[in-house]
Every structure is written in C-alpha cells, then in structure tokens.
Amino acid sequence: MITRLVFFLTAFFVIAGCERLEKLFVEEDLLERPPSKRCADCHQKIYNQWKTSRHAQAWVSEEFIKKTKNRTKTKCLSCHAPLEVKAGEKPQLRDKLREEGVNCFSCHYREETDSIHGPYKVFSPPHYSTYNPEYTSARICSGCHKKTYDNWIKTGSNKNCQECHMPSKKDRLIQKFPFMYFHSKKDLHNHSFLPLKADEQDFSITVVYKGKALMVSVKNLAVPHTVPTAQQGKPKYYLQIKGFERKETLLSESEMITPENGFEYKREKTFIFYVDKKPDEVVVELYRKLSWKKEREFVLKKRLSID
Ligand code: HEC
Ligand code: HEC
Ligand code: HEC
Ligand code: HEC
Ligand code: HEC
Image 1 (cartoon, rainbow, N blue to C red):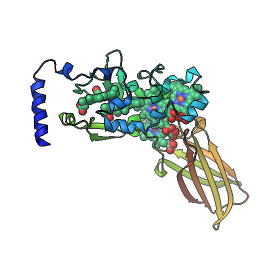
Image 2: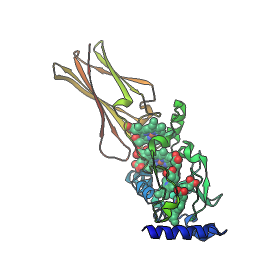
Image 3: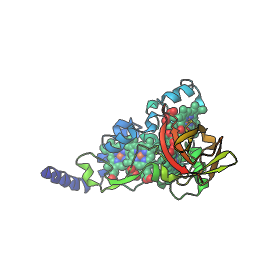
C-alpha cells in the first residue's frame, strides 16, 4: 500500500512537471451533464448523501406527480428538474435525466464557463472548476425556495441556509484512491439537505387563564423563517392542548396551523381555548406533518401549571 502510494506520488510529480497536466487528466464527459452516479466515481460520500435527499425525489415524488396532473402543468416543472441553478433566478426545465430531480450538474455545472462551480479554489484535474462565492450564500437556494428565502431575509438572521441544512465537517471531497491523498481535507457540506426538526429549546410556550378561556402563546425563538415553511408543498403544524384538574382531563382540543400563518420568527402567536372550568395544569403538545410524509411526527410536549 505504502509502496503503491509512493509510486503514484512519484508518477504524479513527474507528470506535474509537464505543462499539459490539466488536459492529461480531463475526463470530458464530466462537463457534459452526466448522470449523478458518474460524479460518485470520485465524490462517493456526497453522492450517497444526495441520494437520500428530497432533491433526488423532486421529479419522482408521488405527491408532485399527483399535484401536477402527471407532470402536465408546465409551470410546475422547472424547479423540480432544473437545467442550471443560478443565484436568485428561477431555473429552466431540462430535457434529459429529469428523473434525477435537483441533481449534481444542475447545481454545479455552468455552461458560461464550461466548468464545475463550487465554494473552493481547487485543483481538480478531471474537470475544470470555478470558484464561485455564491455557493456559500443563501442566494443559491433562493431561485427555488423563494418564499422561505424572502421570509428569512426579513428576519435579518446572520446564519445562512447551508449552516443549518448543510452542516459541514472536515473531510476529503473525493474518495477515489490514490487521488484522494493529493487533496487536503476541507469542509464537506452534508448533501442530504436535512429537513431538520425544531425542538423544545426552539419555542417558548406560556398559558394564561382569563374569563373562561385558556390563552396559549407560542413563539418561535430559533428558526429564522416561518415554521412550517414551504414553496408549494403543504406542511402542517398542530397544536394540541389538554387541561387537567387534580390529574383528570377537563378538555382535549387541537388546532391546525397552516403554512400561510405558521410560527413567524420571534413573533408570538396566541390561541384561545374556551373551557367550562379552570384547570390547574395544562399539557401543550406540538406535532408536524411534512408535505411528503403521510404520518404526523411529535415535536414537543410542555407541562404548565395555571395560577
Ligand atoms: C420556484 C420553484 C418551484 C416551482 C415553480 C414549483 N415548485 Fe414545487 N417545490 C419547490 C420547492 C423549493 C419545494 C420544497 C419546499 C416545499 O415543501 O414547498 C417544493 C415542494 C413541492 C411539493 C412538496 C414535496 C413533495 O414532493 O410532496 C409539491 C407537492 C410540489 N412542490 C408541487 C408543485 C406544483 C404542483 C407546482 C406548480 C403549481 C410546483 N411544485 C412548482 C419549488 C417549486
Ligand atoms: C441544491 C443544490 C446542490 C445539489 C443538488 C448538489 N450540490 Fe454540491 N454543493 C451545493 C452547495 C450550495 C455547496 C456549497 C456549500 C457551502 O459551502 O456552504 C456545495 C458544495 C459541493 C462540493 C464542495 C465540498 C462541500 O461539501 O462544500 C462538492 C465536491 C459538491 N458540492 C459536489 C456535489 C455532487 C457530487 C453532487 C451530487 C451528488 C452535488 N454536489 C449536489 C449545492 C448542491
Ligand atoms: C475522476 C474524479 C472526479 C469526478 C468523476 C468528479 N470530480 Fe469533482 N472534483 C474532483 C477533484 C479531484 C476535486 C478537487 C478536490 C479537492 O480539492 O479537495 C473536485 C472538486 C469538485 C467540486 C468543488 C469545486 C469548487 O470550486 O469548489 C465540485 C463542486 C465538484 N467537484 C463537482 C463534481 C460533479 C458535479 C461531478 C459529476 C458531474 C464531479 N465533480 C465528478 C474529482 C472528480
Ligand atoms: C432547483 C431548485 C432548488 C434549489 C436551487 C434548491 N432547492 Fe431545495 N428543494 C427543491 C425542491 C423542488 C424540493 C422538494 C423536493 C420534493 O420533496 O419533491 C426541495 C427540498 C428541500 C428540502 C427538504 C424540505 C422537506 O420538506 O423535507 C430542504 C431542506 C432544501 N430543499 C434545502 C435547500 C437548500 C439549503 C438549498 C440551497 C443550498 C436548496 N434547497 C436549493 C428545489 C431546490
Ligand atoms: C438557524 C437554522 C436555520 C436556518 C438558517 C434556516 N433553516 Fe430552514 N429549517 C430549520 C429548522 C430547525 C427547520 C425545521 C422546522 C420544523 O420543525 O418543521 C427548518 C425547515 C426548513 C424547510 C422545511 C422542511 C419542512 O418541510 O418542514 C425548508 C424547505 C427550509 N427549512 C429551507 C431553508 C432555507 C431555504 C433557508 C435559507 C433561506 C433556511 N431554511 C434557513 C432551521 C434553519
């Protein structure tokens, strides 16, 4: 193994002396919008993550097929199978490999430079690369996640989408032996585009009893866009409340919150529940349902006593 590595390193430095180094290693099909599996020949880890992401489902999603009447609503298609992603622009629909949804080349290849764009200045012999600072800005997401982006801008948050939805760790960008050892470790951003889930620390909840009513106030303290948030999907949040008097249930009610009036960042929202009798304890629960999931998920539960 070590001798092999030394051999390759020697070979590499000999070749590095030659001017046509770049041309020597170029694999031309990489700049011809190949299937994402092709990128996995070197970027295996990123490919495996992307494969599990909703971006990889954008064209084949059951709900999408249904809502677009079997993909006949043309205005619905371009963000779900884009040709090229550019900061702040709604993309164009592509012709081939639509089943891959929002795939590698749509986010990274640019015809104008005939190269792969990304967040680093790299030495990438198999394909030309162009450093492009847009990749570390929320604007790269904004052409498609327009509503969420506009909402995020208003919060004035200094955290961008990638910091939460593409968390990074130091690793190699490629896994192909032995070439991986010619490149330093960098921040590798998680390409599963995690939908994430808010938790107890992200919300403050208070309950006040006043004139036969329980007023439940909920505030989104931490997520710098409305929760839930959507462009076209219909994710939902549910608030459920149970009142107790000496451990016995007095009331059980629930209320649904839709995307249009979800929990805005740092803005309190109050729900009123009328009750016959004042409880001494109230249990508040939040649940959510993502657009593409059938079942509800538990988010949090808080037990509060009433004075
Ligand atoms: C501007 C880009 C854009 C356009 C145009 C667009 N979508 Fe989407 N779509 C998105 C984004 C971003 C999401 C992910 C966030 C969300 O859930 O809304 C999404 C998610 C969805 C979802 C939920 C996820 C799923 O697979 O179940 C459905 C359904 C959907 N879109 C249907 C449509 C329909 C129907 C149209 C046309 C009326 C449309 N889209 C047009 C960007 C777009
Ligand atoms: C929705 C758009 C999108 C898709 C799809 C996508 N990427 Fe990325 N990629 C990004 C963004 C944005 C960054 C930069 C993140 C940052 O620096 O904050 C990035 C970064 C990278 C990097 C540099 C290392 C890193 O993690 O920062 C590589 C390599 C890369 N992507 C390869 C791929 C490959 C291979 C695929 C397909 C398996 C792919 N990308 C799919 C948006 C995308
Ligand atoms: C034969 C190996 C190989 C294949 C296949 C390959 N790449 Fe790369 N790629 C590299 C190397 C090497 C680097 C530089 C890595 C480093 O510096 O850590 C790189 C870097 C990148 C970067 C970072 C560029 C930047 O400026 O930040 C992106 C994005 C990227 N590749 C995307 C892709 C995509 C998309 C595909 C498929 C179309 C692909 N790569 C296929 C070898 C490959
Ligand atoms: C080309 C358009 C496009 C771009 C650019 C894009 N997305 Fe998406 N994104 C979508 C679509 C379409 C979906 C919904 C796929 C589905 O479920 O059918 C989606 C889904 C998601 C989801 C999952 C939402 C859920 O309900 O689970 C997250 C998280 C996400 N995107 C984050 C990002 C981030 C962060 C960026 C920028 C780095 C980005 N996206 C760039 C189109 C895009
Ligand atoms: C401080 C971290 C943070 C930042 C910054 C952030 N988000 Fe989120 N995002 C979250 C959390 C947490 C959730 C899950 C909320 C929940 O419980 O449903 C979420 C949910 C989402 C979802 C929906 C998944 C679903 O269906 O519930 C999308 C799409 C999304 N974010 C896109 C974006 C985009 C685009 C940006 C940048 C403009 C962004 N986010 C910035 C933390 C963040």
